[in-house]
Amino acid sequence: MTDLFDSFFAESPADPNEAAKRSMRPLRRRFYEAVTLRDTPEGVAVELDGRPVRTPARRLLAFPTAALAERAAAEWRAQTEVIDPAQMPLTRLANAVIDAVADKPAEVAEEIARYLGSDLLVYRAEGPERLVETQSRAWDPVLAWARDTHGARFVLVEGVVFTAQPERAVAAMRRLIPASPWRLGALHVATALTGSALLALALAEGAITADAAWTAGHVDEDWNMELWGLDDQALARRAHRRSEFDAAAAVLALVPER
View 1 (cartoon, rainbow, N blue to C red):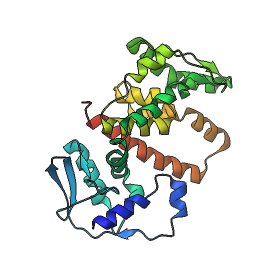
View 2: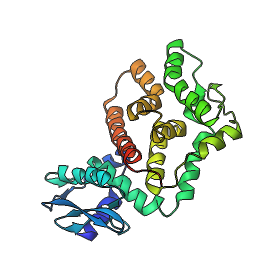
View 3: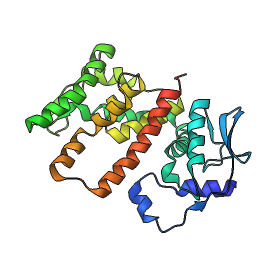
């Protein structure tokens, strides 16, 4: 069983484009009956028929809270004839946290911090007017929160030419990057999927809802979809990304900072 899980999740891609390339590979059949939880020194572990699930690095798949573990267990229970990793975003995120983020938290934090220097929210469209207004409605409240709550004043830029942001503003928001590997990993996912560390930090701090953060991170994409029409492949990719985002949001909501 351990070998199955090691290879299964090591091969499961997070990018649906990569998943499509591997679509000819058969999914593993579901081989277990019961999904249960067990308290362990590492956290609340998911077990299948009484046996622990292992990450690709052969570490115990265990969660810091029972509520989060139950969400992961629900992913395993939802598998029917086969086990489809594309439908298990929280399990995949947990593997990344346990196998990668926990070992190199400083590198992950630095990646998040880099977004602050050129955050999505500071680069504004020059037109048309309706897009400018939509960006302002979605993004200005988050910038106001950063300014009023944390003293971080970012400079707005029209267009896409890089403009350095005040070091004081970047430093103020950088201090909010969590130390907990679980929250750090979730924050990294939310940052990458929205293109904004400010949105991710606002979500982590409870200053914005998950739905609002997701919508704000996709203002430009929504505009282009409205302008050029819907694309089935793009919609499928977006749905996949939303499931990844929701898993990250669940971690931020259910795992307290230590």
